[in-house]
Amino acid sequence: MPLKATSVRLDDETLARVGEMAKAMDRPRAWLMAEAIKQFVAREEWFIQEVEKGVKAADEGRLTDHTDVKAKWEAKRAAQMD
Image (cartoon, rainbow, N blue to C red):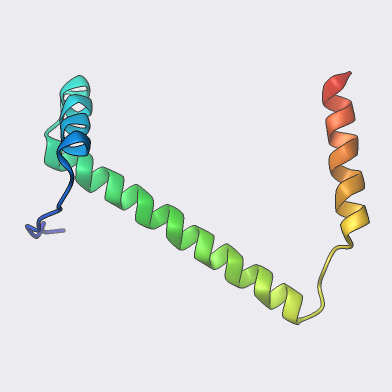
């Protein structure tokens, strides 16, 4: 996939931090910023899709009672304490 040049505006402190991370990773600063944006977009797309699934389930009446969820998490916590 061809790359298209663009610009990103960052404050000086963040830009310096990105530069230090890129140096530590032995990668160009542009690569690090592109990778960060790709990961952010993928994570946000996933989150939006999951919220949409939840809204659809709620609209269809497929809900879990609060007491059931609470009991599940309390049991899980108790098992971790053992």
